[in-house]
Length: 450
Image 1 (tube, rainbow, N blue to C red):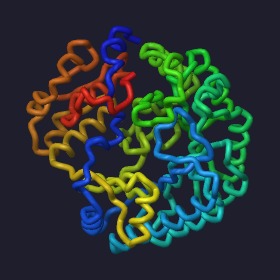
Image 2: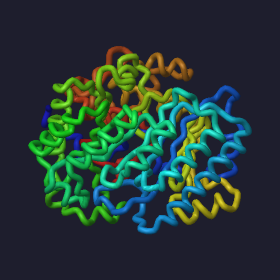
Image 3: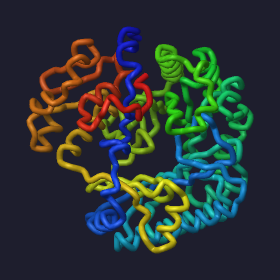
């Protein structure tokens, strides 16, 4: 760890670059009519990934940065599921053919809050409207505190083959401070149920930088998590943005770790996972060496999208549900965030697109550079720029934020090939930001770089 670099760059507010340009740059200039046209223009051989957002939870975790709301009545959830089915039909009809699907991801909120039969109906609707390949990865995000055996059975019958479990921390002090009390035994029981149902791909989500968290508590969480032998870990830094997520005001800022403490926690978790045999994937993922994600990292085919690092090679991501984001060759689209407005559009027979962004040639070039930096900690600027018909020298000249990173030893530049120094990889977002033509450092829209 280089403390000087962590101190110099760690407090910057930077995107996680799950897209470029990032969501704050979407505008209402892209609406339902544009989305419909983009869908109708998809190439004949296009395949797609599907993302379904289920914005409901039984209680609010105070660290949460997702679009979700607390519900007690299951009727609201059932109505929302019916709206999702309508949207799936509308999008498929607009495309005009039954395109191939290679990945399906249910995110939240808590997707498994649905009734098991409703989940099965939703999967059947997707298989009816799209050609879901037999080899498709079907992943569901799970809150282990509320998962039932009936839902596990519905997932099994629906072809789910990967589950992502929110763990965050096993430290009871931290859990109480974030309003998410979840025992190790609850988590272990869910893992056993999933594997017993043949859902072999199990991911754990961990978070560092939480209130009262220490290196020791992080390492204890890793030690206990390793007992359950998940295939992958996602390790995220807590993004404290109470101005945007008002429930985060329930967290006492005085007991949040500072930038250097966060970095120590991230390094400790990473080192422990690597010592346990996991391969570090980019900024914040870890996988077993034989896992598809580790193979993609080794073969330099790893991609990055709104779910983080992925093996998904597709250029089309169709988002369903309130606030869901989609990505097409022409640009990005996002649905209405408010559930009522989203549902009103869909039930009226209209697409629910509220905003989006039309990509320029320069955006596509910069997106390719940023994705390779985020996925590989390096980028062959000569090769990437040549594919876009641009001189690498001109791109380097425009990246003024790169100069201090080179001077500080964060980045090495060998001709047109850029590489992040091995001891500076925790600053990969800072390097990617050097190529972000839209970034406004004065706006506190993102999480800290460390």
